[in-house]
Image 1 (cartoon, helix red, strand yellow):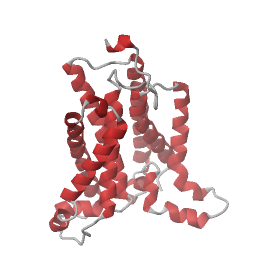
Image 2 (cartoon, helix red, strand yellow):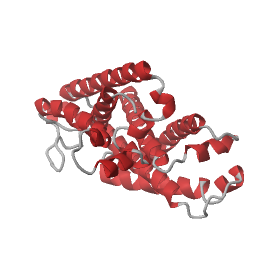
Image 3 (tube, one colour):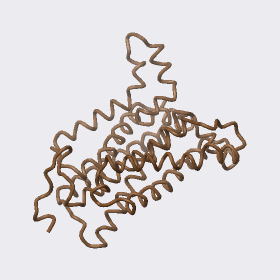
Image 4 (cartoon, one colour):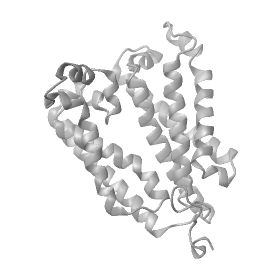
Length: 279
């Protein structure tokens, strides 16, 4: 297994990164945000509970060995043999990712405090690029988890005639980045601003986008290209791609709304930014 500190730091980094769009969009008491670090770290360590549990050690160990622990801060990926063999690199890599996540969280808070509103074309372009980047990145992480829990990396690698988990992972990252740009374009140019900054609306469009991608890419084409026995209705891949679309749509709306005077300042609130910010 990977060092416990690596699991802790990566779990904390995941939670901080997932919180960035929310911090950008809404006003929160920042002193409570410190709790995200220990909560995320403990979340990343949950699969290792069998080491200290006084009872149910065997069931807990069986859970630790399952693919589902990928849901806990990419725990399964960190425990893969190739990563375990790089002990020092995994620790310093986790530290680096953690520091980047803290920096991103801090920058999001600073941006929110300034409360910028996109008025000029260049400002709108920056907001679109930031929303696309964050939405693509977080949705790609969700896609990675969706593929990993099904042990789907070898199947993804078979698209290029390989069975390597590494190749499958790289293809998953490439697909996530490409789909993110397409999904962001769909959201930006097919929705009006009130809908574009509404997470519920964009999540629905993202879900439809994911299902559409699945219908075009999985049932028949994937089976033909790979020559593998892929079921016509492969619901695992449907869940992964649909989840991708929901995350991408939700994050895009949160970030785009951070630069709009129409967005409420708190979740579930109708209170918007002071009028002097939108003039």
